[in-house]
Image (cartoon, rainbow over all chains, first blue to last red; front, top):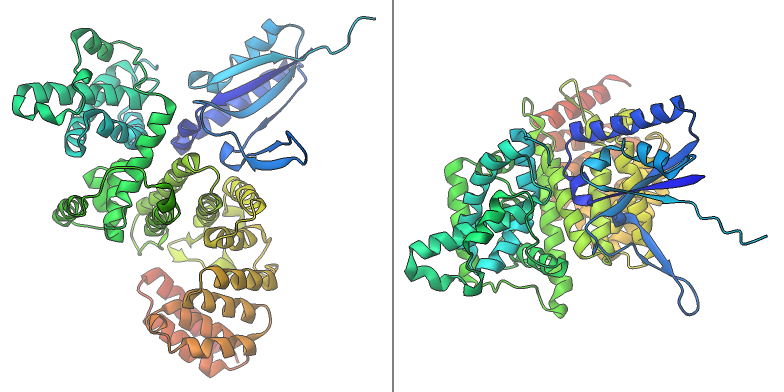
Length: 119
Length: 424
């Protein structure tokens, strides 16, 4: 089953990190990649640019409109994600716990839904 | 919370929280000076407390709570000044004081309150009744949290000069009876433009080529300006020029690593592009594209687009000069200036039309702003050189060298002049 690990963090924290702290975060991610490879877990993921460069698309009535990204009402913003192929939620959670963002952000682990109905 | 924290991490956390903490505190205690004094004391306590117990999850909230208590204690001891506290209901009791020591510090206000607090402080620091250099000074100190030592180093001022200027800046604010508020809607565009101008000034202080032997410390101002622009962008998410300024500064900064090599100045045309910061270029690029999608072009966006062209070109030879020229055309429309005209003409020369460029450059020579402006003469020299007039090119380059203050840049130009004098 696929599990998505959504990485949320306050963008101000990222912005005030110095080079060393940034390097430590990247090292944390690389360590996770190595662990996933070692355990034979299929995965994909992306780091994302901050919400300052995000655009939103909505088309409530008529043509879709392109506006700015999310207004910074939330204290944490989506900074990146992983999609892991795991047997169980518990297994995905064990990997998510290894992410450096756990120390200052929130990792949301969501399972892929099964949209097939009965039959 | 980590179990303890290094001095560096603490300083960083304080700096990052400074703007918001001061801004909200001013509202909570109702007085600018009382807020500043109380915050200073809160910093001292933070340094001691955080060193032992670690940096709290919300440093700004911790600082605000602590400073508020300091202000109230101080006011109680000087009962005459009790009137300074705007809202007596904010007087703190023993139970609340315990919050200081505990791990969880509650939020002072809702998000929209915090947003307005920071906006008020930013607009006040950048008030038009202050001189530009005063705006820069107050912005660095109050919003970016520069202490006096850092201010001296950043602005190359002696301590005594700095202290004088701070006193005068505060006095100017009081004299203009600057009302501490968010500007009215109809004033916003102009006031925001003022804020952007100040941020860009901070950036340019950091961007200047360092003098021979000078450390790179001032370059940190570029990062600070970017941090401030990000703060403003969060508050004004729909303003394309804010996005444009952020993009512009990221793209310029991306090339800083290649500008000085082995103590020598390296111009754009010779820079090792592998040293450019690809991450900043990527972010700058998307910001430019996003801003242009909004279809409200402005000077910062156009300048960012210009910088992006350079950042994306695989080499100087591959730079699409006609596109650069077209963008300078657009910039000349929205923000005409002799410097823009100069750059536009130079782009024309580099695009293979030096004679046309010279036709545009000659009348510029009479402009008062060009008299002492080294880049004008350097640009003129390039146009003459490409038009095949070596003597005129050398004369113009010599004039440019004379007007170049920075020793590193000067050394580079002198080498160039020597090279032009050698080969036939």
